[in-house]
Image 1 (cartoon, rainbow, N blue to C red):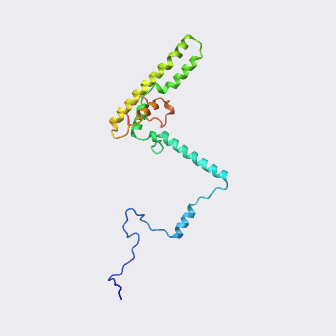
Image 2 (image 1 turned 90 degrees about the horizontal axis):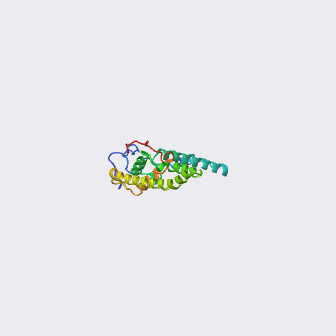
Image 3 (image 1 turned 30 degrees about the horizontal axis):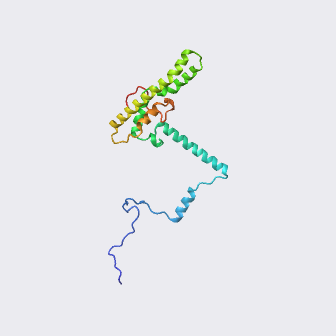
Length: 195
């Protein structure tokens, strides 16, 4: 009696007819039986004993570490630690890697000096007393020059990026043996084209 009659019968609206809602899931909610069935399928069978579980965890962790190590060596941003991330740090690495530095040979030179110290001779005693302070002075001056050059270059190329710690980062990389640097060097010594 009080119902309003519609002039045209309405057909039920299907999911395909509805417009996509922004921020919504835009798919129908599954029935409870379907959701429970999906959950059962996704469950992973638990290992039979504790040893097997530990072994599986160790294998997975080893795979993850290897993947992360390879990604870091390649310079993949996803795997780089925070200290290596960003375009300024990449610029610093490229700058250092494109040069031969005394610092990268310091360990080798000091090893030779130590070996020479075991040879009893007045010349080796003189070398032993003069060489280490001389080398350390050269490396210190070289590190300061590299730090200043990287900061200056960073200001020019990336004026909006933070340069905090980039000088020390470049100087410490210049002291590392080239083969042991991580991420691996992208530039060869003498290559002038940076980032």
